[in-house]
Image (cartoon, rainbow over all chains, first blue to last red; front, side, top):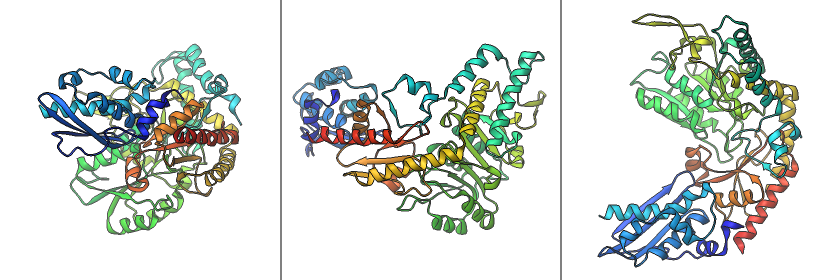
Length: 121
Length: 405
């Protein structure tokens, strides 16, 4: 039951910041072809700050919940902070133990976010 | 049934291993044969004049004989490879212009249910040679669409038909005999290349009766070690196959400007072969013969029947594959509504049930026919029993409760 702790399941069933961000200025769709997980990260970056974020996608509980938790975390933060964010930092936020094969699922949203930031520059 | 022959399974009594389509567990006789070889018989083959080397050569060639007779081949038609992937690459890149003419209307025909190992090499050869690529469709009931095959054969100059004996995702078994006899009549220029990776450990294979041109399988899917496999080919084709691996062991003479090749099978086995692997595979085939491949087939039919009965009475369970026992193996891809394949596999793992989740190296099939990004796959072998199936369905019930809480 470890990885399906309540926080994760809650974020999977009721993902935060899910949907379209119409005034986004940095958008990346990233796919994990091995699993079929897909996430679309939409950022609104203003004055080096992520002023708004939404995500869309389909995938396993880990990928959806991770993206949900991530978007909650990065909203209002400086771009530079997010660029330095590591997978370990994200795992701390998720707060559950993941097996090696699931790290890719957790990382998908973060990878997309970083890519969106770097392409925005 | 034969669980006690497999040390890994006795070392993990709690494990329900349902991933034999990916790789089978290894019986003690195979593990011991490899250990015995390294401890008592290790030497290079085809080289030394001393007794130890001659003995190693004997053992290596005996393995070839054992494997040859298992599929009703002659030993010289049996090439040791590292597995199906290497075997298919040897053919796809080794067939010359007389078989696949560059920049022509030739078509390399695959099927939409091919594993990537019998698809990507042909696709890449097709791109390189600038010829047509085709894919035989799969029917709604997860069989090869023979009507479509007939249409393509009529309309195209099909030079290669690359098809699987049994789908690693759907479990569907194709009637090779019928397909090949149709092809011989209607498309005599076509070479038939069969991926036997999934079939070899589960049903009798007779390459002469099938009249197949090439048949490849991997040792590790039939109780043998990884890194060893077999490519069977008809003599005239192996003779004409350009060796894509050149170097030691496969030459007759080497001059500064050119070389000549050793006779078969050496021509196609460059470098020091996987000797221990070949001996291990020989043992694995002996083990399979000892049980009897027909007996294995019959036993697995019982498992299939039991599985399908269970599946049909399980809510939200969608099977991707033939929903009956006819012409299918014990490989089952499925999804459970509302639970992503990876989540389901992980929850099953919590109950020590090992299944595969993903695209099973059949991305064309997933996109075109199944239209899902991933499925869970449970596959069975002789060491599984009905209890394992009960455990799987209990695990699925457990996953449902986790996702409904």
